[in-house]
Structure formats: structure tokens, C-alpha cells
Image 1 (cartoon, rainbow, N blue to C red):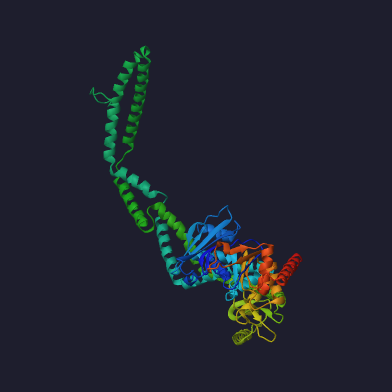
Image 2: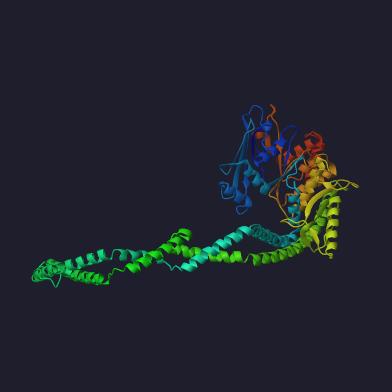
Length: 606
């Protein structure tokens, strides 16, 4: 990742890798700018105040290794990005000194929001004042569901399918009942149209055939005269005394002349054959003209009947189609639609029966999901609370609250679930009980429901003994909250890994044993994800796979050479500085070496 013009950083490159990477440095050296830069790269809010004084803008660029088949790669490609080598995505963000911001993804300019969409799949940031991954109860429910595994996933998939069908059924019932008058009017118009078409009884292409026949009858004399004239011109009149030549006679004369000498020249023989063909063709056409003349009759009565029929058909085409074939197609479609409209009553009854069946199914599935969530929630709370003990919060308790709301119009949940607490919930429960009593039954509990079940899930924290559990972020200090989130991520990471975690000052306000516990758990999290930590504690830094040191130059800037990857000797010196502020002290270095050895042994044990 490259940072330029950001805070105290003039130009720096961070070589990040897999496992646990820690970033350390003296106060004010710009460690937190690393997290700020990463936040910009992940679509965070642009702040002109973060631009280095005297610079025209800040620039952040990063290379991210993606799973080519994963959702992040699919979203990047959808936005027009190009992946280098098929799996490397280059992201960049520019913030001007006036606060204007631009984003690029895989060589393409994109809205900043696209970076944020990718961030949801790629990076989870935990800072002192922002815990992004589980910022909403919906995300907390999703995390619990993934932790629960198939116990929730299988019935939840069936529940969502049934829920979608229930919504479709209710929409159809509402449409049919709400538009009943309009549908009745539509049915009546269709009946009138179909009755008219049935009365006329048009045949396929009848209008085309009648138009052709009307043309013949209306011009019978002209057609007969033309055919007779053509016949006489081709074959002559055998009853006439005139010696006027006709086509067939002339062709016969021409053929005889050529036939007499055809044996003298092959070309002339060919011409003789062609004249013979013309003679046969002329005689054939003459015969057809004679037959046509005999067939053509003038029939005013038939013509009047045809015109009357055409007028009737025209009334249909004006109303129902461009031609008779179109009218017949309309009749077919409208007949099916009329059948659908006429079956509204039966359809509504069938839909209502299906709705009740779906509600029963959803109630059963909702209860099953709720039970599985409660079991998983208790297990998650125990595991995280155990982690908090190791993070020097021995009296802290995580509580996973899975609650429901009574709703007289809700789903009938057959699986027993704990009653929600609180004045509103009690009132709703009493109302439900009264309704059940009035109906003479102690039926299943009616609960408010949504596409994800009947539960509201919230993570609560009791930071010390005797404290009431409160929502995360409201019952703990920044340092305590960071440790809680670390404990959560360690537990959730085993079943719901995130590619990259970033922790900024997760060790604030702790030291000694608690710091070692934090380092140990960061290392455990790094076994399945890339973890980047900004820390000021040597006990945490000792667990790193890679150690980056941020050093300001004498003029107060952080240049490219100011971010260094430390070797073993450099790590000892930096840990010694972090322990006692005297990096050359033999005792501090011995303590640092002891920390590194202990952390290495701890990691080897897993």
C-alpha cells in the first residue's frame, strides 16, 4: 500500500503480507495514518484535514489479492475493473486539499461507493471509535447465523423461500380483491367481444380470400375480354374467314423453316428447338386463356353477398385486430383471460388456503430457527466471555439476546421461545393472550416476523460484575470495546473468516498480562486471515509475523524510507524502545528477546 501527502506522511510504501503485521513507531510518527489511508481506500469519508499541509492532495493506492471466483472479484469486474494476472486488483483514492475525492478500481474511474461495497467483502476495521463489522443488529444476526452453521442455515433457506412465496400470495390476493370491480368490468367486455366474434364465426384468412373473389366478380367482363383477346392473338379464331396471322401459326412457320436446314448447322438446330418450345408454350397459354374465359362469370348476387360479409368482418378487424387472423388470435388470448377472471372466487379461496399453509410452515420453521439461534447464542456468549477473561476482563460477560415481539397479525410459532421482556412486550403478550382466550384456544404464540425469521438479535456487554448488559459501544470504554471486538472476531473467525482485519490501538489502556493475551489472540486470528495492527505495546508486537516501523525524518516528515520492515535485530531494538524507551539498554534488549522467544513458543503451541 502506498501513501502520499497524508498527514505527516509525505510518501511511504507499506509492504503488507499474510499473517500478523504490526505497525509501531513513536508518538506522532504517523502510525494511525496507515489506518486512515486504508479507510480511504475502502471508501471511507474523505476529510480535507487529513491532507498534508502544503500538498495539493492526498493519494492512497493498494494492491489486493482476490479470489477470482469470489463476490469481491465479481463486483470489481462488474464495475469495469481489470484484474492484473487474473487475481490482483489495484485500488486508488485521491483527496484534494478542498475535500474533493476520486476513486479508481482496476484502472477504471468508479464512484467511491463501489470501494465501500468491496470493503464489506474484504476488510474489517476496528478502531478506537468505530467498530465497523458489527455496527448494526442486522449484521450481528448475520454473524450469529453464520456461527450457528447448518442448524440455522438449512431451516433459514427453507423459511426464506416460503416467506417469498407468502409475500407473492398475499400480493395476488390483494390485487384480486382490490381490483375486483375493474376485473369484473374487464370480464364483461371480453364476453361481449367473444360473443360478437362467435356470432360472425370468421374463418382463418377469410378476409383475404373474399377480397380476391370480390375483385374477380367486380371486373368479370374486363377479365373475360382480356382473356379472349389474348386467346385470339395466340391461337386465332378457327370460325373466322380472315387470314390474319396468329402467334401459333407464325411460330409453326418459323419452326418449319429452321427444321428444313437444321442438319447443316448445330447453332441453327438449337434455335429450331427453342422455337419449338415457344410454340408449345404459346399453345398451352392459349388453352388456359380459353378455359379462363369459360370460367369467368358475372354474378351480381354473389358479389353483393361477399361485400356484405366483408363489411361484417371489417367491423371485427376495427375492434379486435388488424386482420381476421389477428381477430382469432385475440379471441384465443381473451378466452384464456376470461377463464382466469371468471375463476377469481375459486382462485382467492385457493390462495387463502395456501396462505394459511405457508403461515403454518413459516411458524414451524421460525420456531426451529429461533431455537437454533438461542443455542448458538449461548455458545457464542460463553466462548467470547472466556476470551474476555484472557484479555484481562475477567468479570465481563457477553450476552447474545435473541428476542421476539408478539403481534396479533404475526406468524403462529409452534416452537417454544422465551418471552421477550419489557413493558411493550408484556402488553403485547397480554393482548395476544386475551385474543387467544376470546377465541377459546391457547394456540401458538403469534410473533412479528420478517424475511429472516421471528427474532431480533443483539449483542450486549456487561463490562463488570453487577452491571446490566448494554448494547455494544454503550457499556464499555474504547479500549474495552476493542478487546470485546477482538474476542468476537477470534471466535467468529473460525466459522466466518474475513480476508483482512485492521486493529487500531486495540491495546489502548492495557498492559502486562492483558497485552500478552491480546497478542496471542491476534496471532490466532492471523492463522486464518490477514491481520494489520497499529500498536504501542511490545507484548503485542512480539507476536507479529512482520513488523513495520514508522520513523519520521529530522524535518518531521515520513518518506518512503521512513517505513521499514524490521529484521530480527531491528525487532529487538524496537521492542526494547517500546518497553523502556532506551533501545540500546542491555536489560531492555534482553527483555525484548525474551518476549520474542516467548511469543514464538506460544505460537508454536497454537
